Image (cartoon, rainbow, N blue to C red; front, top):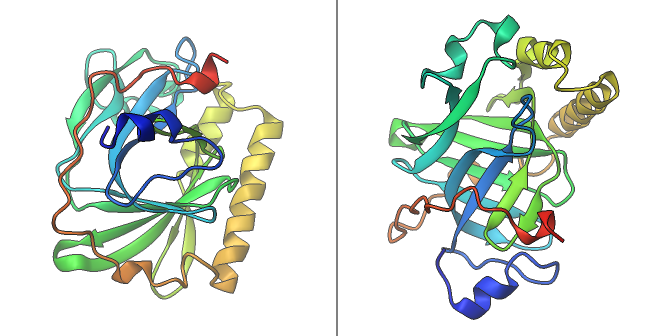
Length: 232
């Protein structure tokens, strides 16, 4: 991580924020049997803005990340849906392909909003990733993905994504009916925000551009380290 030792010791507490240009980790913990609670997605990102109202981070093209893979190293998407969440898994380092992604998250929201561009900064869409409200620690943010997502387009239309995976996660026991109801309710809340065209959709983030002097963050060897909030 970048920054002074003093900054490292205080980042992630309730009263502190990361400065623009700092590097942190955006991580997700696994639901799968035998891996519950282990980090299986880790993405080094650069802080764009960190206030009491919003954390914005940039994942640059060419960033080395960690992603889940099947035990033989093949992509999880190759596993049939019926066994996708029960098949043995591990993690692998992988370079982020394609364009960069801007991620926006408000404290306490059960989702984050991602912005995607094509070549030449052609804006494509927003993506509402339904997830647990993020837990802040000294090295970044941790969450759990909730399978169900929403795509939002420049004409303000939207659609559910990954409903098949959301249903299979429930059949596989990764999510109780009560938890699934809460996730669906969160999605409907996000849909109401989209319908009202509230922030961040109305905030002009699609016109944002990264500082050209920023370097691509490096994936640390201890990307899966246990933060203090899990041991206290």
